[in-house]
Length: 135
Image (cartoon, rainbow, N blue to C red; front, top):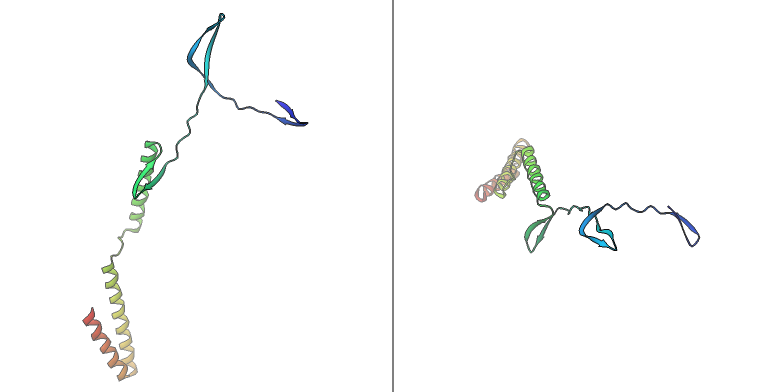
């Protein structure tokens, strides 16, 4: 529909609203009448994981929340399956670190023996003893 406002032409395309008949109706001066209501299109509630004072909760349609949880669990399982290992503990890391230090010390001692540096050999052997005491 073409309209004009203050000399400016524009096209007006009203939205087609679907109407549903209501329960209210009757007759007025011999003519029947009925109340019509616009049909509401449900807007889906967004699904979100929230936390209030440390307590987690979800909002949204319960079915959508359950689907979101299952997808999250599936992706966590898939990630764990692809890695196929657990996170190393602090004790595992400390042991690995100690093994690397010992390997490095053995290499340095071997190089010192090849050079024939008796002073460096004595210092490295002292370091090895200290490492044995602390480890």
